Image (tube, rainbow, N blue to C red; front, side, top):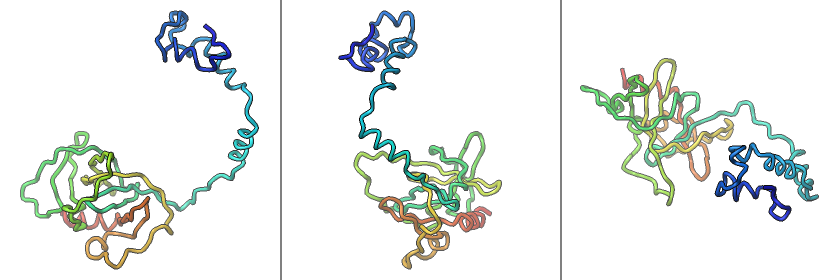
Length: 225
């Protein structure tokens, strides 16, 4: 069945084809509408159709627009949340972002930063609390946006052959920024948070603490020794 001019492109397969009630007799031969010559003819008519002058002007403007050149020294970070705090770490230190795993406690652990171990793909990985290390008050939780689903995640971080797993309340995005986008820490930030943070990034309507991964891993080594 060939669509008439009044039916327009894309009509028969939406009505009697695979996207419709599948009553088209041609389906027995062609199995799928994309194999039917009617579909090919409709595609040709669509590509050969007349284009309105205003569309030609708009497309020409878009094609002629100078390409956006990404600055070479830009950096990529993963933005995540621990309790009320939004934080970021360079993408290079992430081995993976996984779903939460069952935590196995370790006897006689001496540091509250050490939570235990988790099984990741058959390997036991040390699980640590960045919230404890950074002295974040986890009893304070941000107001949830209506209709937004929030999924806890397990951040797997690496330096050399060392891997640690970090529970996070939420992973927001991978974000690229330029070094001059990093603002100094406000004077109100002090203690462990200041010692492990390089500066502050603006992301959407949030202030995100950009963590210093070298200082972070050095402190973790001390707690795990």
